[in-house]
Image (tube, rainbow, N blue to C red):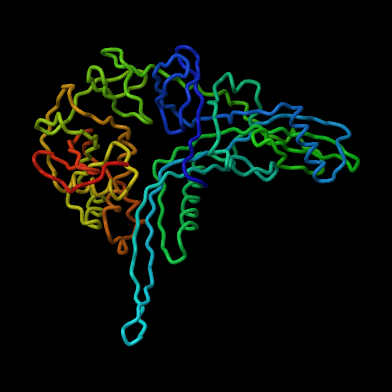
Length: 460
């Protein structure tokens, strides 16, 4: 398993049919032909893709004959049934919260030459992107268990109804529950392997996204002097992955006859007031038109106009950063977490923009939560503010609450992390607000309602 890749997904422009390429985490991109800014509508259910790249039948036979020559086997006497099939793989990606505690032994010597030993403890919390893939079928007979390094170089094609026609898809053997469980178990194994022997480790997968990726293979029956054989050729890697004695029985394969493809729809990403393109960003929750200043929230194919939540005061010369403000509900679970983490506020602020450093994000969230439990907001519709658009939706932000609270603590040794993760936090209110910061060198200082917070780096 590797870190999240830059896998490209090739869509089609809704206006001219030109290419629109998005990274796997993006939903907004310009058309490469007409330049229209487009937004990909979220799909219901699991997404399915094909790995772009194919191998003609004659080339598959060439690679098979070359493999036979390498193995000092006779060349093919007669070809039997040859068929291309598509193997399903689960591709899982998400964020992973990792807490690691390491004991360091120190050795010092006094003036009289006496040796002294003592231990110190080092704790570290991190939030990383992790991606993996694994077979969604019985992998024993095909010789491939994972998409492997392909995930870092793949260009995927959405499995549309047109692309699904006349292709033979192997049926999924495992369901989504299995895929999520496999991802979470693999995350824990990977983090333990990556940690040092002297470290204790705890990992938790957050916001996992599961999709199905189909890989094309040629299965070739053939005979040589010693009898019947069959070979399996990977169309993407362009290599033979298996050569076995006997005859491959295509009649025993379970094909998915219901695989009809999914419609991946792209719509215009334009301000409904003035027609200008809305900002391009990897993800989108709220958008602000740079031309007329209107603010929108995406609602399917349409955009819903919304007002701005901003603390009272004149902040036109400050940078305004978006935060999700959650009011924790008065529940037993919330009380347990607040007591365990010595957190006395009912309000938690989660950045609605990406901060790569978890400690910085946690420090900022906690300083805001503790400094202002009640903020008096105006609802504004003015346009001359320096807004940073929100790119983290409320669902993902809410899953960051516990990681941020944990990352803000210096000592987690006394906590039962497994028990804390089993507690389900509820909130009574959520609100997207913008808080003003003025730049001071590489840092920003908060100036909300006259209160200055600690200097907190917002740069990623």
